[in-house]
Every structure is written in C-alpha cells, then in structure tokens.
Image (cartoon, rainbow, N blue to C red):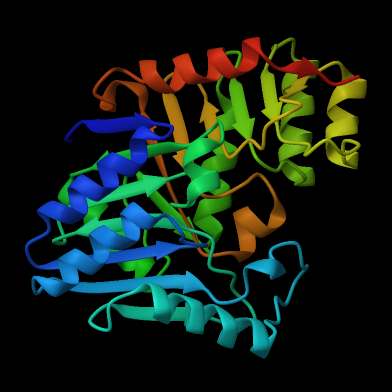
Length: 302
C-alpha cells in the first residue's frame, strides 16, 4: 500500500488548495460545513477550467446534537443552500443534504478519482485554526474508491477506510481498544457508553490510557465523569476548541471525522482512516507529536 501523508493544523489549507489546483478531471468533496475563502476560491478556479466539481454539505448544521431522527429545518436548509450558492461559481455542483435520518458530518475529498483526503476538522477559519486539525492524503486506489463511494452516499469500506452510517464503522473503531498497550485518544466529543465501557475495562486491566477531550469550558458529561472517577487520565484544553478525532493504538492509528459518540459511530455520514502506523510516511510521528504537544498544555479533569 502507498504511504499516508499527514498535514497538521493550518497547513492543511495549503495542502487542500494545492490538490484542487492540480485537479484535471474531477473533485468530489463532502463537508459538514465549508467557509474558508482560499478553499472556496480553489474549487471555483477548478470549475472554471473545466474540472467537474461536486460538493456535498450539511444543510442544517445546527442539528448535530439531536438524537435519533435528525429532522432538518426547511428554512435552515434553504438559507444554507442560498449562502453556498452565493459563494460558489455556478459551475460547481452544490448539494445541501437534508436527510432526516443521516447527518452529513464527513470532511473528505477525492481529486481525479485517485487522491483521497480525509480530515478531522472542516475547511473554515475555525477548523484550520483550532487544535486537532489533521489532514491525511491517501493515494491507494482501493482507498480512493472507498472514500469516493462514501462521499457519493454509499457507506463504503476498504482495508483502511471506514465510513458510516454502517455497523463496520463502530466495529472497527471499537476493535482498536483491544490493543494490549497504553493508548492515546484525542476527540472533540466523547459520550458513547460502549466506548466508555471499553476504556474502563482497559483501566481495570492495568492499562494507562491518556484521553484528551473538548469540554468547551462546560462541566464534563456523564461519560467523562465515569472515566475520571475510575482514574482514567482525562484532560482538556481550557481555552481552545479541540477538533481532533484520533486514536493511537500502538500498531494502528485512527484519524477521521467520527467522534466517539453514538451519532458519530452509528448514525452520521462519516469518513475515517484506520491504518498501520508504518503506513504513514513518517510512521505516525507527526500525529503523535501533535498529541504530545496538546497533552502537555492540557488540564486534568477532576
């Protein structure tokens, strides 16, 4: 398999723009939201030179926290489509998704059917500037096909790509917690009871995982409180909004759009990569270095 290349933080903007500038035939992308001027300009420029550009976006981004049926508000969808129509060249095919059962939450693109990009944060000012943004480029043909299928609405899988809503998404993420090594987890949202149970079982077996979460300055939810009470080392970054979705299970690493929530693992349209650490062109060093940097500035939850 080909190497996976990782770009961290604001540099992801340039990596995406360079990829869009190199497109010859097609760009297919899926984002929860999109607002970065450089990225939008790159997509518009590609469409103007004859590249077929299709962008799927969530039509009602405010419904993320809803449970079960995610019924969109029609006025929100119309407003979103109108706003995106104003931002994009008429040659860009913009789809504002409003499926009541499936939230559009992925952050991915495929260029010319050959180069796949999977990110943890949305391509907007907040996403690029906040800690935890990681963009992975994957040029393996089977992975590019799987990401393209997922963008097109099929919960496609490959040896390294996971997507939802599909039971394989949860199964493959949860399997990472079977590793007999101390693990590092950094995630924007953690509330899924099955994931918490897995972490608690690992703690009971004597493993010492480190869990970095986003609390947005609010009181930790019940799931996080369970981990803290059990003695799991859980930390948060007080003054920043963490956008990470990352699990380092030693020999394998997960990066993607799905949070460790019921929504992320079971219900939403998500795209992620679970790969051997050696598949990354630096052995996962950049992802691990970013986790250590964030961890060192985080505050332990009590």
